Image (cartoon, rainbow over all chains, first blue to last red; front, side, top):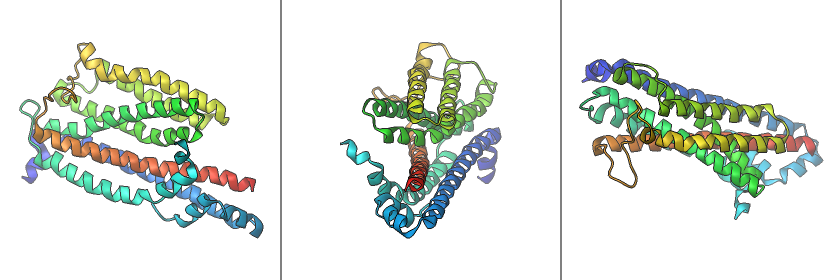
Length: 75
Length: 235
C-alpha cells in the first residue's frame, strides 16, 4: 500500500511534484504575508511608544488603534 | 449599507479571525489530502495522474473567481467612491496570483503524462497565462504608483481589461478545439465526474478557498495597520 502511495504505478513523480509545489507555494505565501503583518505591527508599536502622553491619549481613543494593540500576537 | 464596510468596524472581526481560519483550513486540507491521495479511485484512462486534478482544478477555479471579485470590487469602489473596496481587492490579489501560478504549473505537470508535453499553446492554457500577466500588472501597479486617485483608475482599467479574459478562459474549451479537456462539472446540467472523485474535489476546493480567505485576512489587516501607521505620523 505504501509503495502504491509513493510510486502510484509510475505516476508518483508527477503527482507528488504537483502536490509538493502547491504546498510549497502555500507555505511561502503564508510566511511572506505573516512577515509583512508582523513588520507593520512592530512599526506601529514603535511609533505608538514614541508618541508623547497627550498624543498617545488621542491615538488610544481611536477604536482601531485599540484593536491593533490588543491583537498583536493573533496570527 | 456601505457603512458596515468601514475599516474600524471590519478590523475588530478581521484581526481575530485568521487563527480560527488557519485551524479550519488545516483540518479541511488534511481530510482533502487523505481523500485525494489515498481514498479516491484511479481514472480508467489516466491512472493515478488524475490525482493532480485535486490541486489543479481548485487552484484554477479560485484564481478565476478572485480576479472576477477584484474586478467587481474595483468597479463598485470607483462608482460609489468606497476606498475600502480597493483595499479588499488589493488584499485578495496575492492569493489569486499564487493560485493562478499553481494552476499553470500543476497543469503543465499533468500535461506531461497525459498529453506527452509540458506545454501547448492551447486556448485554455494561453488564456490562463494571460490572466497571470494581468494579476502581475495589477500587483505591480500598487507598488509603483503613490498617488491614490491614479492607482484606483489604473487598477480599475487593468481589472476590466483582464476580466474580458475570464469568460474566454472559461469557455475556451467549448469555443475552440483544444488539447485541454472540456469541463467535467456543470452547475446546470449533469456532471460527467463520478461522485467518488467529486467529493475530494469539493473538499480540496473548500480548503483552497479557506486558504485564500486566510491570506486575505492577514493582508487586509496589514494594509489597515499601514494606514494607521501613516495616521500616527499625522497626530
